[in-house]
Length: 410
Image (cartoon, rainbow, N blue to C red):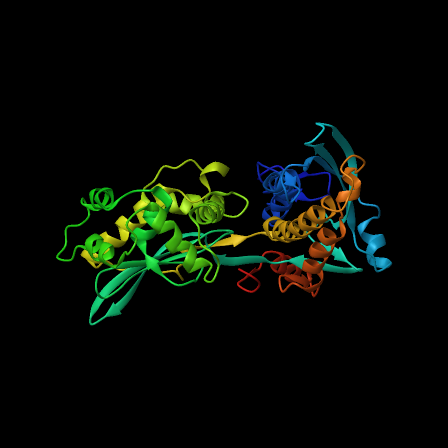
């Protein structure tokens, strides 16, 4: 008979090993997501905004540098008993540069109190314990679609970034490939190619000759619908589609299009989007901030894939498949709201820059934390994903914290 042993807790063991399998932390994913938001998510948001220039871009520049969340002012239990929010204050080091004189001013600014995750993975909002449910969303990236016309598939594609203009490609029954930018009027895809890469018809034909193996020459069909005869004409044509009624000049068009596609503040695939595009198109573009903006290699690869699919008639991507969906955890959901608030604060700061004396202004006079605090609190108070925790029993509480939902924005 095995020797009987008793551990410190009074549990009796007859086996050779008296250890019990350690229960894993079943909400570790939520805690890690929140920690990532606190450690790196905020710095990424500040990096996207830096620098905040005045409207002229020649007088003042505001930069957010180091930041720190201090300890919460109350305990979780005290907040629940007194109908308070369990929150922590955020302090940020802000640098203001006077571009005229070269003077640099630094100041630590209190940027408000923000709901803080408890050790149990919950949030206490006005005395009520809430859970942020993870969201199941369509992943960013590129998806290839198909429309059936007269019994034949004609293929297209959708580029879905984290932020910025969507691009939607489609093939017409006459074989021409068109693109819609931000759901505006469509233009021939070769017009966009000319505008962005400044190439001529001969170079376009040369780029796609290796995939033009079918009965229909899709490149030629698209060029026939392309009325632009050079890069400058293409820029103006795209500009007119995006800004009908505005005066179209080459400089205006180039400036707007470059900002729309190649400015990281306005266009970002996101890490997941860049990864998915690389995987779907067989690219090896580095997943860095510089390469998360629109790339010409992406455009050429997408058009080649559309032509290949038009020739082979393969099945299009299933946009509802789970392989084309991903989970947004609490850190990413809160970061989204924090970014919304920071963009409001940015506009506020730029307005203040234009109304103050640049010699005497300080960072504290330009930074207003209220829009940021309001945006984050609005999420916890009214979002479909920030739910009152189910406290029926411990198991229902745990399952609520691990729940997935397809509700909410995105």
